[in-house]
Length: 130
Image (cartoon, rainbow, N blue to C red; front, side, top):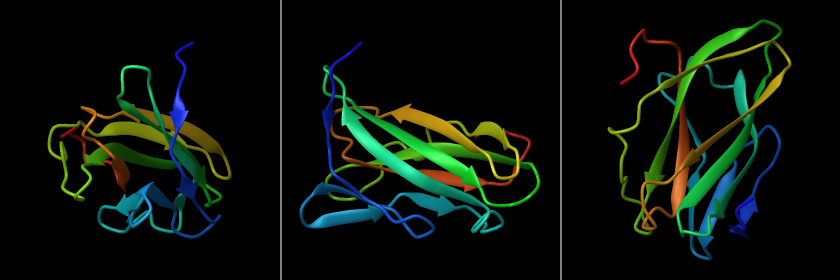
């Protein structure tokens, strides 16, 4: 097991989660592309840890608030200390399915040690992974 250091996280169930990489800067953890799944697939908890090699590693728990199974796609987008996206077009969308009322854990590793924050993008399936 790789030892990890924790960064701080502020979050409220049912509301937006904020990740703080430094005291004066925050960003929304989830971005619903198209808005169809807003209020249905929610991020309940998230955290960023640094691996021993210095790369950030994000973990999040998604919850399906609907009573039926939801098909969706997600990806992690990473940002530098100036809130500029590092790799927003390079990461493929990952397909997922989540039964009504269930939770699932997802994770992703930042592309470099310049990655300070992340955002989970969620959308309805598009049939392609880009």
